[in-house]
Amino acid sequence: MNLIRYKSVELGKKFFLPVILIFIALASCLFAFVTLEHEGHWLTGMNNQVVWGIPHVFAIFLIVSASGILNIASISSVFGVPAYKPLSRLSGLLAIGLLIGGLMVLVLDLGRPDRLIVAMTTFNFKSIFAWNIFLYTGFLLIAVIYLWMMFEGRFNKYVTKVGMFAYGWRIILTTGTGSIFGFLVAKEAYDSAMLAPLFIAMSLLFGTAIFIQTIYYIKSSFEVIVGEIIFKRLRKLLLYFILAVLYFTILFHLTNLYATTHHDYEFFLLLSGNVYTYLFWIGQILLGTLLPLYLVSSKRFENCWNTLLLSSFLIIFGGFIQLYVIIISGQAFPLDMFPGFIENSTFGDGEVAQYMPSIYEFMLGFGGVAIASAVFIFGILILEFVPDSLKDEHLQNK
Image (cartoon, one colour):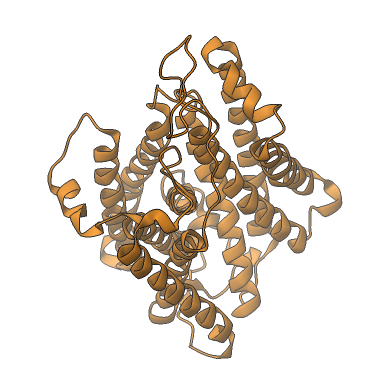
C-alpha cells in the first residue's frame, strides 16, 4: 500500500502573474468599497426593483461552489472511494477560500457593514437569512476542523465522522441558499421548491468545474503527474453533474409552466426576446450546458485534457450566467401586487425593471474571487496541500 505524500510549494516566478492579478483585484475591490461607502449605492446599477445585483451573483456563485467543491473530499471519506483521498486536502482548502471570498463580497456590498454584528447576534429564526448566517459560519468552522483532521495524524480516525457531518451540513447549506429564493412567494420567478435541489446540483457542478481547473493548474505549474484514473473520474463526475443540473432546470421550468400564476414570467424569460431570454438560451443552455455536455460525453475527446479544461471553463461561465438569470431576471420582472389591476407609479411599479451593473459592482465581485485565490495560494505555500504524484500506480491499490 502506497503512502500519500504531499508537499508545499516555493514562491517563484510561476506565482508572479497570479499574485499581480490578485493584488490588482483586491486594490480595485477596496477602492470600490470605500467609494460606495462614501458616495452611496446610487453609483451602482441597483434600484428599488433590483436590490440584488452583480455582487450577489458573485457571492452566491462562490458560496455554492464552496459547498460543491468539498464533495471531492466527501467522496473519499464518506463514500469510501480511496482514489480521491490525495485530493481531499485541496478540496478542503478551496472550500474555505471560496466561502470566505463569497461572504466577503456580501459584507463589502452591505451599506453599513459594521452593523452586520446585529444580524449575527440577534436571530429571527423565522427568517431564512438568519438561518443562512448560522449555516455559513458553521460551514466555515466545520471545513476548518475537517481539514485539520486530515493533517493531524492522531485524528485521522475521526475524518470519516467529521466528513459525514460536513457532508450533511453542506447539503443543508445549499438547500438554505436555494430556499432564499424558493421562499419568496411574492415573486413569480422564485416561489418554487425546485430551487433547493437545483442549487444542490449547481453546487456540485460548479465545484467540480473549479476543481478541474485547479488540478490542471497544479499539474502544469508544479510538475504533478495526473494519471488516467483521476482524469476519467473527474470527467465522469462532470458529466453526471451536468445532467443533474439540466434535469432540475427542465423540471423547474416545467413546474412553473404547470402553475398558471407563473406563466407570465416563463413567457418573459423563455420567449419574449429580452436580454434574459438570450442569456438563458445562449449563455446558460447552449454554451454552459449542451456544449460541455457534448465535449465530456464524446468518445472523440475522452482522453483530452484541453477539452476537459474547456468544458469546465464553459460550465463556470454558464453557471454564472444561470445565477445571473435566476437572481436578476426574477427581480426585473414586475411584481404583481394587485392582481387584476394595472399598476403604475414613479417607482416603476408594473414595468420591467432596467438593470445595468456598474464597474464598482464588478470590482466587488472580482475582489471575492481574488480573496478565494489568495487563500488558495497562501495555503499551498505554507502547508503541504499538493500531492507529490497522482499517478495511477499510486491510486490503484488504495
